[in-house]
Structures are given as C-alpha cells and as structure tokens.
Image (cartoon, rainbow, N blue to C red; front, side):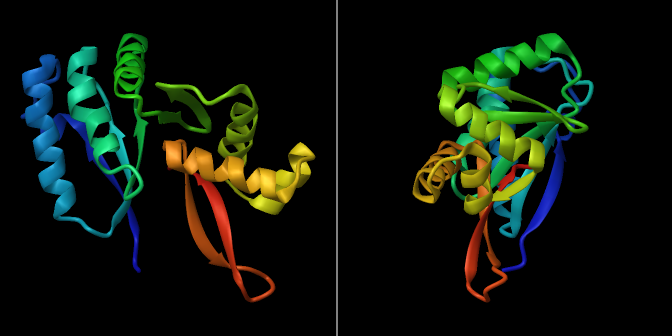
Length: 183
C-alpha cells in the first residue's frame, strides 16, 4: 500500500475565518475535513496546521479533535504550528472532552494534548516520541522490562491514539513492528 503524509491548513477549512468559534462552525469544518480526507484514501498521517487561527475550545473540539477521533485506528493525526498558548489550552480542553489524545509538534518539541497516559506508559511514550521510532526489543532493553510487557504497552499506546505502528522487514527477513511518533 502506498501511504502518504499530508498537511491540512485549518484556515482553508474555515472559509478563511481566522477566529472561528462555537459548535456550529466546528461541525461545518468537521464535515469539510471529512469530505476532503475521504477523497484521499492513501493519506495515512495527517498534520493539521493551526497557523494564525485563534479558536475556542468548542470549535477545536468539533472541528479538529473530532476528526482525529473519527479516523482513530485508520489515519493518524497530529497538530503543528500551534503557537498561541491560549489556543494550545483550548486544544487540550477539547481533546480532554473527546477523550482523544493528540500530539502537537513544534520542531523536535512536543506537547501531549488531551488525556495523558498512565505514569508507566508516559515514560514509554516519551521514549517513542524522542526517538521518533522504536521496536519492541529496543524498548524492552531501554526500560528493562520483558519483550511481552513492552509489546503490550506499545499496543495500548497505539490503540489509545498516542503513536502509530507499521510493519517493516526485520533483519531476519521476517516482519517486525515499528512503533513511531505520529508526524
């Protein structure tokens, strides 16, 4: 399967409105995102660029976070260009309300928005995000835990929407799962 990454600029889905607010406009924007993404079946990793948009938490919940939740397990989402601290807070509140975590990236720095993983899984998540990609065996060594335990924890982080998993050919010639930051 030929999968690709795309970037969607939020302002292009708000009719150029730089200060969108509320549930109604959020749902309209959600529908525009869905229609666009459904026309791009090979889009696998989706960056939503916030840019200069200043939006309230209701809009962010309905427009951005709902899209990530809608495609959970099918497409992987992250946020970029989230420069305003108030908008970052609004995104966090929106992600909390939807129980949909999403990572916001700024260069190599990241912020986990929405629900936070358990303390033990947070350490593992931070390893994946800082290294960008890991294998189960690498994590088991890094955390001094069994491969089975590492595998279970990594799968949980994928299911919850914090990271993604892809298949690669292992050095042995078999299939190996690689767990990666969504970006």
